Image (cartoon, rainbow, N blue to C red; front, side, top):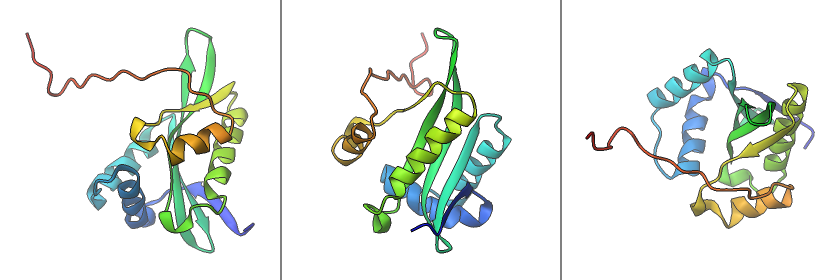
Length: 151
């Protein structure tokens, strides 16, 4: 199990990243869309997409970014995506990714980490986060502006 690496994602990872994103969202992600997502993170000063690779096989992905909190004058590491291929769950991969993100946040001067998880994932995923010491601290409110009525 010590034969793993967590590294930045690259274009060669796109097929497995498409599969991981579909497992996460339940919707297919095209290679073109995944390439756009990868390019977006590569051009960002705060977003990074990592993959977890063990025995030369990508098994999971992690998207991470730095968020600055004006109210507290602090920085947090946001875990935007953490997804483990269903064939590799319950082997410690998710814990290793979360630990990696937390250490990265510390290395970048953050005071903590946080993540947002949808209501539909409350059984397995929410229990996982709670077991790692994360707390539920509020709600996220979202308004789509693409289809909002203009008035």
